[in-house]
Length: 521
Ligand code: NAD
Image 1 (cartoon, rainbow, N blue to C red):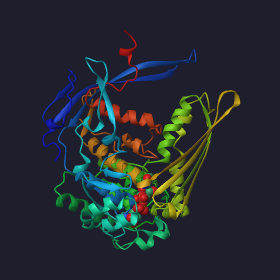
Image 2: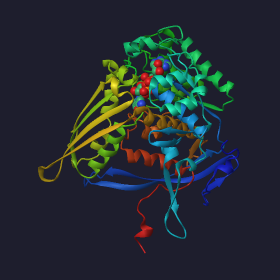
Image 3: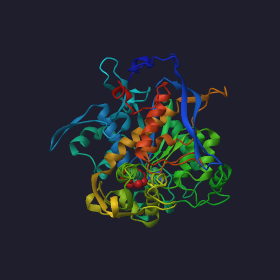
Image 4: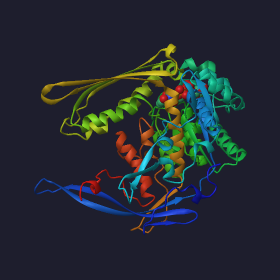
C-alpha cells in the first residue's frame, strides 16, 4: 500500500512561522493579496488598491480509503479507466507492435505533472516535485472501483465492446474485470438517444424520477462503502449525454421544489439529477462528466443546503482543452481571433448517442461558450458584446471507433489587416484522454473534502469550500461555479488556481514567474 502514516508520505516540509504540522493536520496562515478597483468620480480614473485578507487553512493529513463509483461504468470511459487502474496496480507490461508498453498515468495532471516548489538554496535552480506529492493525496492505485450501468454486461465483455485497449493488455485484466458487474441503474428513455435502448437490460423498475430511485442509489452507495470498508465514496457521471432538462418554475428551480418534483415523478427530472440528489443527500461528492444540465438551480441549492460537494460539467479532454489553451495564447498575444470552426467525427457509442439532435444540442452548448471569458477580457481587440464566430459540428462515423477526430480552424486578424489561419487536426482515443481526467477529478475532489478554512479577522469556525468545486475547472469543459461567480475557461488560469490553492494550504506564495533572483543581482 501507499503510506500508512501521514509523515511517511511527505516529501518535503515547509519551514515557516505560518505553518504548523500536527499528526493529524497541516495548519497554515495565509495572506491572500488582491487588488480592488474603483472609479474616482471626479477624475473618471480607476483607482487600484492592494488588499490583504488573512485566512487560515487546515488540511487533514490522513489519507482515507476511497471508493470511486461511476455511473455508466460499462461504457468506454468506465471500462478504460478501470482497466487502466488495474494495470497500474499490478504494474503490467504488455506487448504491442511497437514493443512492450508499461502502465502509466500519462494525461493526469496530478499523477503526470510537476509543480515548482522553489529555488535550490545552493544552485539557484528550480526544484520541481510531482503534483501528487504537494498535499497528502489519495493514490489512484488505492481507489476501489464500482458503479452502475443500464447495460448489465460484465466489465471484461464491456471492455471488448469498447474496442479501446490492446488485446495483450485486455488479456491480463480480463479475469479480474469479468468479476465486475455494474449495479442496475435508472433509465428514463426520453433523456438519451433512442438508439441506446438495446443496451438497457439492467434497469431498476420505473421510467421516471421517484424517491424510491433516490433511496435505491443511496443504498447502493452505502452498501459499496460498507462492503469495501471505505471512508468515502465519490460518484462520477460518465454515462451517456442526456438532453437538457427544461428549467421550470415550481419544478426544479429550488431545492424543495426539486424534491417535490421527484416525489411526484415529474418528467423533467433527469436520471443524472436523481443521481446528483441521491449523492448530495448521502454526502457523497458528485461530479458530472457529461454536458447536460444535471445541476438545475434546485440541485445546486440542495447541495449548498446539505453542505455537499458537486462539480461539473463535461470532461475537457481533447478539442476544448486545445481551444482553451490556444485561444488564451492568441488573444493574450494581441491577435484578433475572428472565427473558430470545429468539426468532430467519432465512431464510439458516445458518437452514436450524440447523433441524436437533443443530445448533440447539450454538447453544442457545452462546447460553445469556452472562449467567452478570454474575449470579454480584451477590450482592445473586441468591442463590448463582440465575439469571434464559433461553430461546432459533430458527426457519427462508426469506422473510426474511439479514435476521435477533431478538426479546428482558427482564423485571425493580424497586423495591418493581414490574416493568420491555424488549422489543427487532433486524433486520439477519446477514452484514453478522458480516463486520467476521471482520476484527477476524484483525487482533487477528495482532497477538497479534507481542506477547511476560516477568516482570521472574523475568528469564525473552520468550514469547507463552497459546495460547487470550481477548482475542478481545468478538467471540465463548461465549468460549474458557485451561483453568480464568473466562469474561467483559460487553461493557464485554471491550472494556476489549482496549484496556488494547494500552495496556500502549505503557507506558500502563489507560483510567481518573475524570477527576480535571476534578474536582480
Ligand atoms: P459510452 O456510451 O461508451 O458509455 C456510457 C455508458 O453509460 C454506457 O455503457 C451506457 O450503457 C451507460 N448509461 C446510459 N445511461 C445510463 C444511466 N442512466 N445509468 C447508468 N448508466 C447509463 O460513452 P463514453 O465514451 O464512455 O463517454 C461517457 C460520457 O462522457 C458521454 O456523455 C460523453 O459525452 C462524456 N464525455 C466523454 C469524453 C471523452 O473524451 N471520452 C469527453 C467529454 C465528455
